[in-house]
Amino acid sequence: MRQRVSALWSAFLLAAALPAWPLQAQEEPEALLWQERVERVAGADDQVDLVLTAQVHEGWIVYGSDFEPGDFGPRPARLVVQAGGQAVQPVRSDGAQQRTGSNFAGEYHYTYFDGVATFRQRVRVEAGARQVSGVLNGQSCYEASGLCTLFREPFAIALE
Image (cartoon, rainbow, N blue to C red):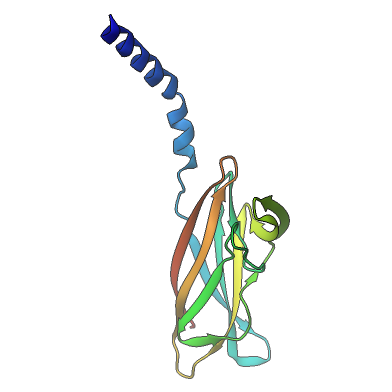
């Protein structure tokens, strides 16, 4: 009798969990598909703006770069130029929205994208360089559940 009740209880729990599985699958992050381009800076022959843009999936946000991280909470995006040039100013978050949040550590301020994320980095190009390469590191979150993931997007953008 006890085994039968245990088996029925297990079947009930399994049946109750089944409808939740598709909802959890929606929370799985899909890779952001980045498009990269270079824009010349007027009046500065040795400088360009690197522009990295991605569509942000429905229900997700991507954190911007222009806020200070706290001990806990969102991580700002960082762009590191590794070859072909040198960053001349901090990476900018074009069109990011501002928001304030709070957690057990207190209140914090951050910027984020929904819909489209665009980062812009001004770079002084090295003489003879044919491309600028580096990596964009950031964080994205599924707002409905608070699930957050880190991303690392290497890039190599041709200058010609």
